Amino acid sequence: MAYSLCGKSVANTGELACDKSRGVLKKLFIFNGSIAAADYADEATFTQKLIANSKLSKNDSNKLFTLNEAQDLADASEANKEGSLNLGFKTVLLEGKPGYTMKIFAGGDLLKRLRSFNNQTVRILELDANGIVWGTKSGTSFRGFLAKIFVTGNKIATGQNVEEGVVTVSVSILSTSEYFDNNYWSETVGNIDDIRALNDVSLVYKSNASNVFKIGLQIIGSDLMGGYNIWDDYGSAISALTFTAFTGADFASSLAVTSVAADTALEALTVTFDSTAYNALSSGDKIKLVGPTPAVLDAADVLDTEIIPVILTKS
Image (cartoon, rainbow, N blue to C red; front, side, top):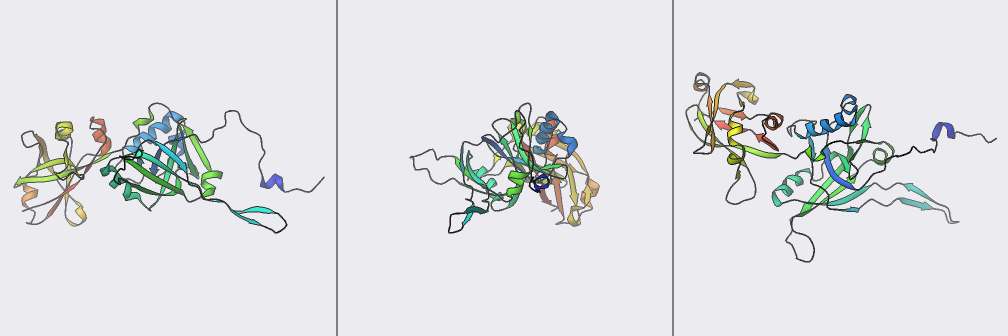
């Protein structure tokens, strides 16, 4: 019998029935956070956690960003680096890092937002066409694969191919050990499209009379005529929710908001600050007005929305 260290360095080669393999990519999620073991105790809990994380503010470290569904895929993995001896022996010296390009449909405004991730080191989760989410683990926490992405598109269309509205996302995986040797998966249940992408809706100053301010609601984009006014969609619903305000150094001091009402004629919120506290401020002092969180908005049927604060100035 030959001496062997294989028992300490290799695994057995049996295979479980219905073992999972990566299917065709359906959606890519940018996810720099982690999911604790309690939140992937079963498929339903895991799916609901992904949905909840997609509705977090972009300032939250556990925010999940979802990209539109893949329409085209191409392998862009680096080739293995090989070495040989002159009598014919050949071996792999260095494994090439995996990568791929995918094409999605996206307009010019979305492209600008996606390009904010260009050349940044992020973590990604992959949802395949079989409803399986692929990632890695750190301790008992589920995480995304370490990667860099680069987004291009919105060139003038030539009319020779499907080009209008097509955006290319290049994905470069940074760790072969994570991607191949330490990948983990979970099935999803229910409607995976409940994992949503949010729109940035900016609070926009219109006018004020003393402590009463008129505030618009707009999605700021590339339209030369101005941002998209969401008032008809959600203005009344948003006016029924709670807003907060802050002043002072680093906006650390609270300023009471006594009421928020709908001004349907102006298509704006009427935000009233506590008069005593407002009058105590000096001219030129800054006020940060903050809207309800995406989760609160979603619960009020204001869907796919994150409200961006506005900085106001006491005149």
